[in-house]
Image 1 (tube, rainbow, N blue to C red):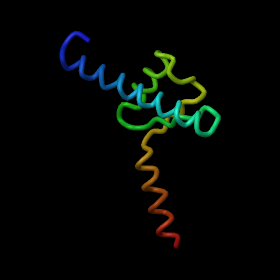
Image 2: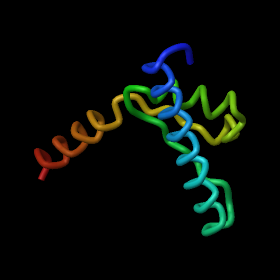
Image 3: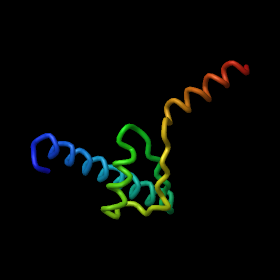
Length: 83
C-alpha cells in the first residue's frame, strides 16, 4: 500500500482472508474434511484471488456465488407464491 486508504483496504482484505482460513480450519477439525468455501459479495472476487495467491485455500474448495442474496430472495418469493 502506498497511502492510508490502500493500507486500510489491504489490511481489511488480509483480515477477511485470515478469518475465512480460520473458520475453514475449525470446520475441518470438527467434521474431519476440508469444507467448501462459498464466496459472495461485492469484493468476493478480490477475496477469492487473495485466498488463492496466499495459498490459504485450495482452488477446488472455492466456489464463487454472484448475487447470492438476490437468488435467495427469488427462491423465497417463488416458494411463497407456490403455497
